[in-house]
Length: 252
Ligand code: ADP
Ligand code: MG
Image 1 (spheres, rainbow, N blue to C red):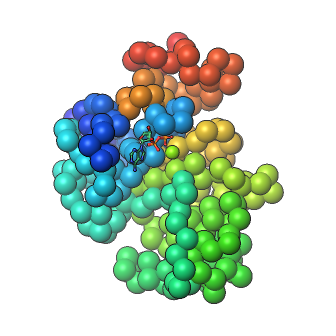
Image 2: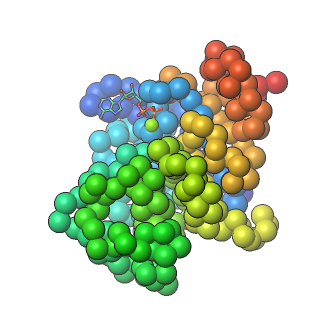
C-alpha cells in the first residue's frame, strides 16, 4: 500500500439485486489528485461512485475500500459522509415539500461547516432557487448547479462527481468548472492540496477546467486502462472504446 493513497479500492465486486455489476475493480487516488473515469453506458461507472458513497442497495460481495487509512467497506452511508465523502448525482431526485435552501442549511449544520447558504447560492447562481422544492422543475443545468452548491456546503475531502457537465449548456459549463475547482481546492498548489476527486465524464469537457492527470476507462465492471485522460479522450473520439479492452498499463 502506498501511504500517500487517500482512497484505495481493491478487488471490488459489487452486486445490485443479486446481479454482479463490478467484477474485481482496482483504483487508488493519492493525496491532492483528481482522477477521471470514462466508459461506455452501462459499464458500471455510477455503480462505482454509489458504492464508494455507501448506498445500501449496492452490495459489496468481495474486496475492500480503504479511505484515509480506514476500512470503510461495510461502513454506513452517514458515517462515510461524516468522514468527508460527498457525491453529486448523475440524475438527482426531485424532493417535493423540502426547499433547496433548507437542505443546504441542514448540510451546513450537520457538517459543522463554516459556509453560508446565501453566499454559496450566489456563487452557484442559485439565489432564486433556495425557496424552491429540491430539483422540482429545474433544468438540467440548474440541477447540476444545485448539486455543486450542496457539495460546497458539505465541503467533502473525497469529491465524487457523476457526469457534472451533462445537460449543462455552454454558458453555464465554465461556471460548473469553477465550482468543481472550488470544491476540489484547486486554488492551492498541489503540495498543499488535501482533497481528492473522482469525476465521471462522457464529453471530457470537464478536462478543460479541471487539471486531472490520471484517467481510467471502466468497461464491463473493470478498469481496463489507466493513463493520461487527454490521450484517452483523443483515442475514444477516434475509435470509441474498441481499443481499450484488456489494456493494463495505458493506451500506448
Ligand atoms: P454507467 O454509469 O457506466 O452507465 P451503471 O453503473 O449505471 O453504468 O450501470 C451498470 C449496470 O448496472 C447496467 O447494466 C445497469 O443496467 C445495471 N444497473 C444499474 N442500476 C441497477 C439497478 N438498480 N437494478 C438493476 N440493475 C442496475
Ligand atoms: Mg452513469
